[in-house]
Length: 336
Ligand code: G3I
Image 1: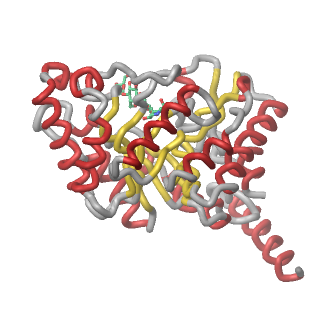
Image 2 (image 1 turned 90 degrees about the vertical axis):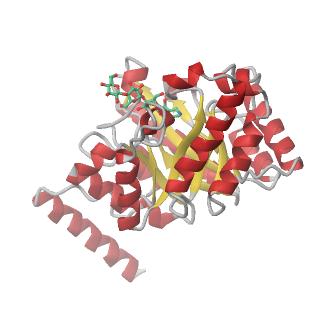
């Protein structure tokens, strides 16, 4: 007891000294978030932000996994056919290797942020180009990626298949084909399907459940389901989130929270921050309630860099740290 108390006092003193010295504020007297759980704790990052010393130091201190926010997407890595740009992806993978972090690869087959030249391809050619893409990208980082979002966002809200070029030109089987190609390209990576608005029990999460159950039955090499978890305080917490994680786990699949954030209608006030904190804690607790929920990753950790204000005008402040890298109530709630 005495020892715990004095450790805490020492941490507080260190925090005060760091503030006085003008350094990045230590997140919590309780110690880094990543040390508080046996789950993987991750954040999305943009490669360019790794050059910001304070950003990088909080990232390194608090998280044990990074997900490239855009750098591994097809439009970025192969904007023109056979012309590759790996600079951002390499920077993030190198950062991870040098700092003992794992990487979540994001993402191989997605209806968004794919290069325009794919639109000119017919079914047969597109099928082989997708295989090649999976091979090339996964091959480049073979053995360095813990988990891959192989297939992303294939469902509409009503649970029907999204009519992407992959769906329209390759048919339903593009999903199973992608997983088979992925397993062959990097047998050591965990292979996931990933989507949003699939947190609670609803038509879309039912469709996801039915699909992955059938993939498992067919022996398709899939290891897990990613639940993005882009939430908003105004919509409240999705009902049945834990039950949904449980039913996926019961199929023998891992579950990962892959892109968590909880946006707020601006301006921020204490009440909204508290609501946000409660919702982050609910996500954290629901993941920890199920042994096979193996990862808690946020889609950016600081309000300094977040996709939210650009996509939802009037909303923001969705992250665990404010734009000065000070921990918000949400952070303190999950790491008391
Ligand atoms: O890189 C260009 C830059 O050259 C150009 O000047 C600028 C002008 O708009 O755009 C830049 O590209 C932007 C890119 O982010 C990099 O910053 C795109 O416009 C912008 O659309 C893109 O947004 C990304 C979005 O995915 C695209 O759908 C967000 O950063 C990224 O956070 C977001 O991430 C997605 C996940 O991949 C999947 N799940 C949902 C999540 C949030 O939307």
